Image 1 (cartoon, one colour):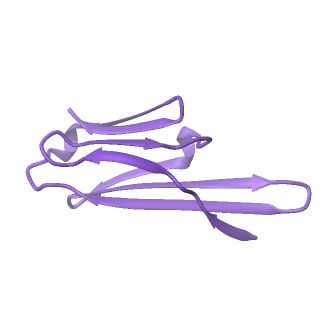
Image 2: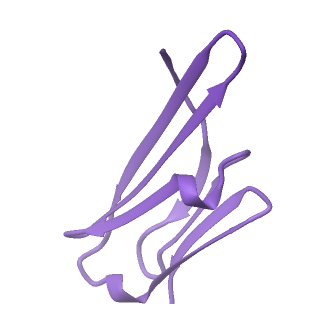
Length: 89
């Protein structure tokens, strides 16, 4: 088993109206884990690719610190056309 990195592009603003836009090509919604804990937003995913001769696992994790004034209970997340959008209302 070999582990390789997944490269994602993220555009984000996490100050007044927090919004994270991340390109996640080929990642299924059930493979993305979003955590909000103690002022920190963490995005994780994992891909498993299996072929006749090998199995490859790719992991990604990135964390962002939020301003203390951000209402973490107002966050939503959507995945459409390989673009993940996480934002506070």
